[in-house]
Image 1 (cartoon, rainbow, N blue to C red):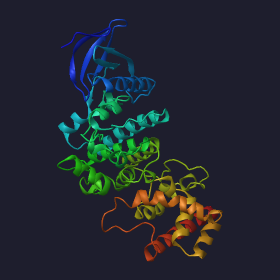
Image 2: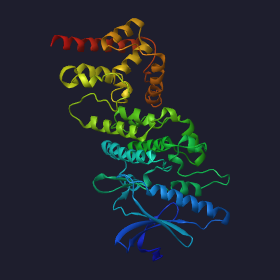
Image 3: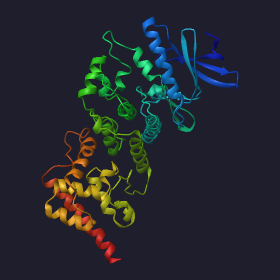
Image 4: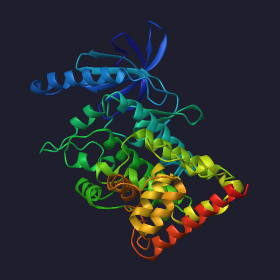
Length: 408
C-alpha cells in the first residue's frame, strides 16, 4: 500500500472503486481526515492527455458543488500515473451494502432517501452538471439517515473507461437511461431515469430491467414496461406506482423534467401516507393555475366525500395538474359534453380552456397514468360511461361545496 499521495498521508485502504483504490488519509496542513479516490492514468499516450484534461475539468466543476446531499470535494492532484480526488470522509455505509444486508427497506424510508438524492441532483443540474452514474453504490447513508451522493465529476470518467471493442460506453447497464443505451446526448432527465430505476429496486428488491447479459438489459430498458411496484411489494401505495412510472418513462419529454419536481412528489407522498388525518395537498402550484381546491375547502372537516371521489380516480396528489380547478376544466373539456363544461365554467368562474391549454395537460396525464397501470386498469381519459360518471360525480361535489358556502 502506498503511504503518500501528494501532501496527504495515507492511513489505510477503504475499498476498490470503479477507477482505482479509495484510501483514508490525513491532510497534515489542517489535520483533517479525508477520503482519497484514485484514478489510474496509465493509458496509451494518445489517450492520456485528453483523458487527464477531462478528469481535471470534471473534478473542478464538481468541486464547486456545495449541497448537504452531495459529498464535498476538497482537492484534486496527481502523483505519478495516479490522479486523485481528496473529498469529505463519510462515516456511513453505501446504500448498496444496506440493500444487500436488509433486503427491502420500509417504504417511507425509501421515499425519504430517494427524495434526498433527487434534491442533491437538482442542485447539481442547476449548476450544469449531470452525474451520469446514479446507482446505490454511489449513495452513502450517514448519521440520522442523511444521504450523500458521491462520484460527482468522475462519473463520466468511469463510464468512458468501460467500453466494448466497438467503443460503446457501458457504465452501469441496469441504471442507464434509454438515451444512454442508444448513445445519444444526455441531460438531467437521464439522471432522473437512473434514480427511478434505483427507487424501483429499493421498493421491490429487484431491478426493473435485468437479464443474463448487457444486451438483454439494454433491450428491456428500451422496450419493456416493468410491473407496478406494488404488485411485487403490497406495502407500496398506488401513488408511488405513478411516480415511478413518470420517472421511468421511455421518452424524455414524458419524464419528470426536473429532479426537484421528483423530490416534491416523493416527499408529499411520504408525508400523506404517514398522516392520520388526510388532506388533499397540491404538490407544486403551476404558473397561472386556477384557485386550488385545498385552498378553499377543509377536506377533513366539511367535504370528506370529495377525497373519496378523487381517490377513486387514482389521481390525488400525483401532480399539480390533477389538483387545481384548471385541471378539472381541462379534464371536463376532454371527456364531458359542452353543456357540462359550460356549467363547470360558471361554477369556477373560469373561461373554457383553449385547445392549447388542453394539449399541454395531455402529456403529463399519459406519462403519469398510462405506462405502469395494470393490465385490467382503465385509462384515465377515455370516452364513454366511466369518464361521464366521473364528471357527474365532480359536478355533484362542486355544487355541494357551493351550497355549503351559500348556506353558511
